Image (cartoon, rainbow, N blue to C red; front, side, top):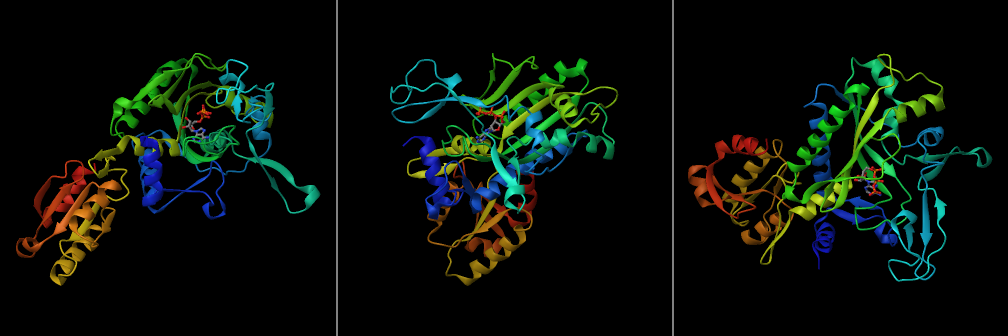
Amino acid sequence: MDVMEKVVALCKRRGFVFPGSEIYGGVGGIYDYGPLGVEMKNNLKSLWWRWMTVEHDNIVGIDGAIITHPKVWEASGHVKGFVDPLTECKKCHHRFKADDVTGQLCPDCGGELTEPKNFNTLVPTELGIIEDEKVKTYLRGEACQTIYLNFKNVVNSTRVKLPFGIVQIGKAFRNEVTYGNFLFRLREFEQWDLQWFTKPEEMDKWYDYWKQARMDWYSGLFTHPDNLSFHQHEKLAFYAKKAFDIQYRGQEMEGIHWRQDWDLSRHSQFSGQDLTFEGLIPWIVETSGGVDRTFLFLLADAYTEDGDRIILKLSPRIAPYKIAVFPLLANKPDLVIKAKGLYEHLKPLFKTVWDDRGNIGKRYYSQDEIGTPWCLTVDFQSLEDNTVTVRDRNTAGQIRMPISELDSYFTEKLK
Ligand code: ATP
């Protein structure tokens, strides 16, 4: 089994990610996050959000609707221009983006390919309850559009001045031609986007700034940052001067886009509204990343085997639980009472889990597999001197520490 297959199995076994609608046979390209997955995903999103909106003074957030006016997707070019011409194999019926295949034969089975046809990847929906009066619209194909739609509302309701950013984390929907590879290519997924509005003369400077800042941010989270790299695009949209992706082992995780004044100009044209600010239509640097892809790559990067021990070496900041608390023996009331007291104390401060099943070795293995960075054990010595053992996930090494020092120890570790 390769690492990805092992990660998929671990996700199901330990409750990170489940196939969508599984009891009905599933829906391709749709997944649900389980009890551990939602904790990790929330940690990830709140780190991103904090970094963007707390560590930068000039970035504000929005949370836009998934359903927008149908004209949005005409203005964005998705309804007409941005459809992907596809070609289908007459033998195995696999479909490919016409741009991705060079010859006449199927890359999967060698069968003959059809002429490319246009497909619209937007997911349509209808609003209204009367059959003939329903309005056709789309679930948003990319989250960023609601930022453009609210550009005027934000500048009119806040005190932002150029350059400034608007961020959003939100769902997007695409009828992907070839969905698959677990969370890599989904039909329903989440994006984190920054739209950075600047004067044209500062565009180059800000593009380079955000490109590096985003790489540094990801590098701080991955177990092996060497697996991250930039990929430079050679084919550029007509408005773009340059385009880079941040990749994990050669696969796109986030795009750093030079969008110039394209989006606001188009919405201004299609809506008839004046979207100028400080005397011009601002230019945009966009950083657009996939939350689910990042989640998947973080798990794959953290997955480690040491003999029969599986260890998820996740950054403690994103691990679902930070601390596990055990009584050495579950049948010794003194130990259990003391350990429970410690658990109740730590629970509101750090995401903490209680475990008193089986033997201590099994509990360590179980916590290693879900990435819990520290396990605290209350033993007989704890009853005498108020210390506990603190075991480190990555090294399996243990130190003994006074209970009174734990809060500051973990606060420091989680900074
Ligand atoms: P790709 O070339 O892989 O289809 P894209 O260039 O269409 O991606 P963007 O539209 O730039 O992607 O979206 C920004 C980010 O959103 C991507 O870098 C990726 O992390 C994420 N993303 C895009 N499509 C999907 C999908 N179908 N499933 C999961 N994540 C996605």
